[in-house]
Length: 105
Image (cartoon, rainbow, N blue to C red; front, side):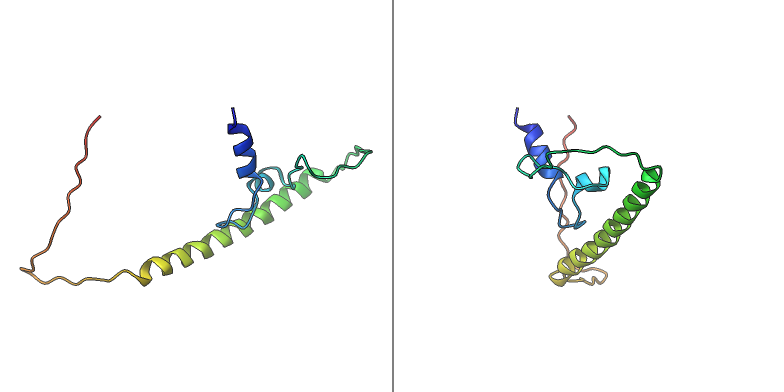
C-alpha cells in the first residue's frame, strides 16, 4: 500500500552515483512534487522542435550520468583497493581455501 509513495520518493531524489534524478533521466524534466507551488493558469503550446530538444536534453543528461558513474566507480575502486593487500604465494606455501556451501533448492 505504501510502495507507490516509496517508489516515487526514490525516483525523485538525487542519486549519489549519477548525481541525477531518475525521474529526470526518463522524462527529461524535473518532477512536479505535491507541495510545489503550481501556476494558476496552464498554457498548452505545441513546439515542433520539442521532440528534438527533448532527445538532445536526454542525451546530455545520459552522458553526464555515464561520466559521473565512471568517476564514482573509480572512487569506489580506490577506496576498496586502499585496504586490500596483494598477496604473493610461492610453491608449497600453506594457504586456507574457503569453500562456500551452495545448496540447490
